Each structure stands twice: as structure tokens, then as C-alpha cells.
Image 1 (cartoon, helix red, strand yellow):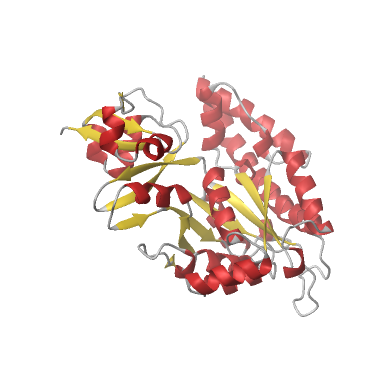
Image 2 (cartoon, helix red, strand yellow):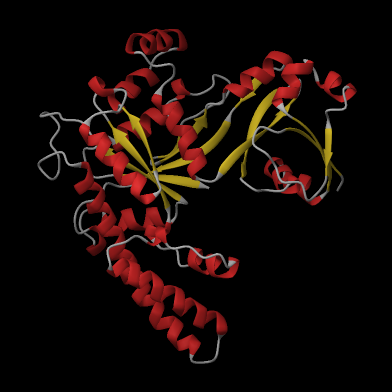
Length: 363
């Protein structure tokens, strides 16, 4: 799964993308960099890894990784092919969630494409273009579904009902992500429409260095907008984060202290994107490495094992699981086992965030 980073021109989108994928922000034991010109691998900082390593001696620590796509900037008329509109829309259709960078800083040296800074107007510009593109897609899919429905196809009939609900929302200026179904079949059919505004959104408020707490008027307006949508906001100063990403760990810590931050805002952002994609982490720990593995929230133990290797899922027998608190209390895996705190879980077990696991399999 991957998230796309979007925004109007000159909002700091590419600066943030480059900082997120810079090697300096990542673990020294794992190479993070740009995979393709617009695709990056991003570390998800997790202090639990260091805690595990303090009890289980290992050669390296590897955090979980997520993919981030820097999508071409959008301008008014993108849904009609203006600017790089077609490229923008095709790339955003392929990602699983959207991180929307919104300019919340004033700088006379950086021209805003609309002539002034207004984050809500900017959000509405991109939302409008996505909704217009979705309307075109819905109209096209309605024509095809009607032909199939005439044959008595029940799935096509249900699809028509869902398309009608989507069209009603879009015509009212509301994104499709506000539409939900309790019925798993209908929810699946909605996802299969691949509508742009059905994707989850995280707003990234690009703030000024004078407002690192993100309490300024522009950010406040974005927070209010996100709250009304049931979404979230992460405030980041792209300029500062870009500088931090280029420093070694010692200089970075000194600079963070000087500006009153405990960690780079990009660390907070990476974890927020991870959550946006519906991920949680479980850990494996041994002599070679302590590693965080991304797994979908609600995944079963065999599915989690399959993240490591498909053979682990195919031949899954059981999982041996314990919690980080158990490790802190008992100091070693052997002591956890001796205390009867090592749980044996089967195929139906739903993974919990922070589980430390050993998988047994046979193929």
C-alpha cells in the first residue's frame, strides 16, 4: 500500500517529499531513498524498536517502511487536462490514500499560484478537481452498468445503486469518502469504483518557522476543516525539516533542542501516514535483527506471517507471541516463557499492534 502526496504548486510538497525520503531521517541500518523519480521509501520511526534491542542483543534494527508517491502538482482545470492534470489524476488513482499539503505560511518570495495564501480555498480547489473527475468516471460507469443490468445481473444492479449514491454526493459538492456501507459486498463494490474522492485524506499544514506549534490562523482553519470531515492534520515546517534531514544525528538533536522539538515533525507525519493507510506494526527479534513489520489492522496471524514470506502464510502452524511490557518486566524471552507469559496463537488470532512474534510453519 502507498500514499500519494498532493498539493498546489509552491506549497512545499516536493520539499516535504525529499525530506521524508532523505537518508538522514532514517535508521543508519536501512537504506531509505527515492525508488523512482517520484516514489520514495519512508521509515516509520518507532521507539519500541530501541526498547526491544536493549533486551535482545542484535546486529541491526530495521523499522517498518511505507511508500510515498510525489504526485504532479495540480492547477484549476486539471480534471479537463490543464497543466499536468492527466498525469496527476492517473497517479492519484493508483495510491491507497492521499496526503494533502496545504500552504499555511506567508512568504513574499514564494509566489502562490492563486496570488494569496488561503488554505481552505486551496483544499477546495483540489477537492473540486477530484470531484469533477469522479463525476466523469461515474457517468461513464453508469452507462456500462445499465447495459449489464438489463440482462438481469444482480451485481450490476447493485453497482448502479452505489453509483447513483456517489453521483448524488458529488453533484452536491461532497467527496465520496463520506459514503459508507455496512454490507461488505457493497463496501467492496464501492472500493472497486476507484473514485479519487473515496480515498482517505491526511492534511499536512506546511507552517512557518515562527509557528512550529501549529497554532496560527491558517492552521487553525485547516484543523477545523479536517475535524468536520473526521480527518486529521499534521503541522510541519518543510523548510526546517529539510534542513534537519541533512544533518547527522548529533547535530540534528542539537538543532531540535534549539527550536524546542523532541523529534522531527516528519517522524510524527510518517506515523500518521502509516495509520492513514490502515497499518499497525508487529515485531520479530533475534540475533541478526530486530524488525518492525507492517500489517493491516485486523490481519490474522497467518496473514502477518505472510508479510515476511508467502511460505510462512501457506504453511502456518502457530505463532508464539508476547508483549513489549512482558519483555520489559522479565528482561528476556526465556524468562517470559518460564513465567508462562508466552502465548501460543493459532490461525484465527487477530494481530495486535506491538506484538512480538515467532512464527512456526511447515511447507
